[in-house]
Image (cartoon, rainbow, N blue to C red):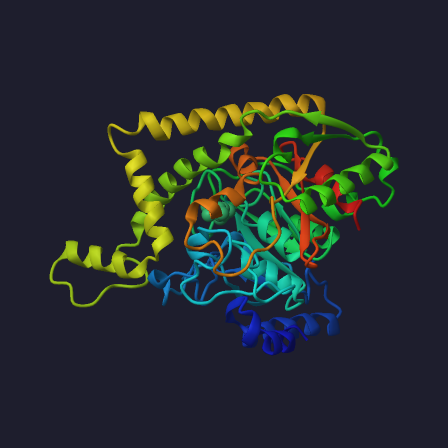
Length: 450
Ligand code: GLN
């Protein structure tokens, strides 16, 4: 059914870069055979799932939506996709993204523009736009994305689905193509909080192949979801004051306020919380993330992976031409910003300063979490915009990440849940931010809306 749906919708939606129909059918048959033989089946047995095309999948192209990895077929499997396969999931294909996950609309893909299933003339958000659109359009039941500054939560908000960015270190990054390693996390998308909870339990856990992986016991998140919110005792919810200012669409404000009021009527205590350094999140992120990216992307030199420009007559011109032809404009912009910020003489003024701001943002959260259990704010200040509307102005695109970026800078878990629609019928997302490793609490509060 998922494959039929993909076939019917893809000519208009373009959420997949590669559909792995053959493999999916084999995986599904293997599940059937296990059932017939009376063998035990995995947690995700037979569930059709889409994978963002920046996770390495053995024998299946992994392009990061970049020309530079056009013909790259990984010789190994990422930890997350291996866990999915072990749990019996049926992987239907690799989803579209902004090139190397840099962007917020999926328009930076070198291959195709994905539509928003609610209005095809609009963007699905990004960078995991393909994964969010595929779930919203029911081309698969759940999907996997990655979030460096909002790339799961923002497209979840734009497409009216649930998406969670876990605590940094909860999910292994082994086999995730690195963008900004101190911020990148893999996480699930689903149409319900319960689906997301099940998928998170399946992909989380310690992995010796990722040096930042946390050695913690992974709860059965779905089992901890209780329909009766009141039974969970008094929860203290903090509204982040600074996110309700200038630039916030009034319809988004109304929907988010209403959603928070609903929690209050269910017995939650509501507090107004100030995070004064929140507004420095975007400027510090756009130093730190490009700096890390400039180092991570140095490996694409035409020697080891993917594309090599033809016709070069020496090593240096081969490097130069490969990178000039292989990378798109946004990726080049980030490499240049990052290289500049890290260069001798500017390091202290930009990179070091951005790291200090990162600490201040973290401290804002630490103070807030002394008073409350969960923080609430809009996921994005607006709903989905028209394709082409912002891609000539990178700064206006960067500002969309205002409310999601601080969460990555502090390494905290954050979830986006649908909380209403604007006047054009486009979905609005509520963002809930939790304490380190309190995904259980976050999912529980989000579950209230189901
Ligand atoms: N929109 C942000 C950026 O372009 C976030 C991307 C992400 O989380 N991968 O960097």
